[in-house]
Image 1 (cartoon, rainbow, N blue to C red):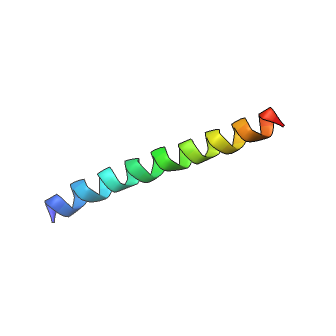
Image 2: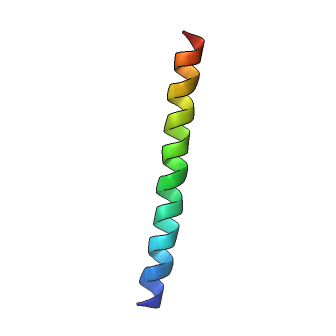
Length: 33
């Protein structure tokens, strides 16, 4: 159970970073236009 918790935390951080990346890219594209 402990290992799963650590995996979930890593997964959440990974998803969060991916979300930030997409938001930055979209914002940058809108700014360019």
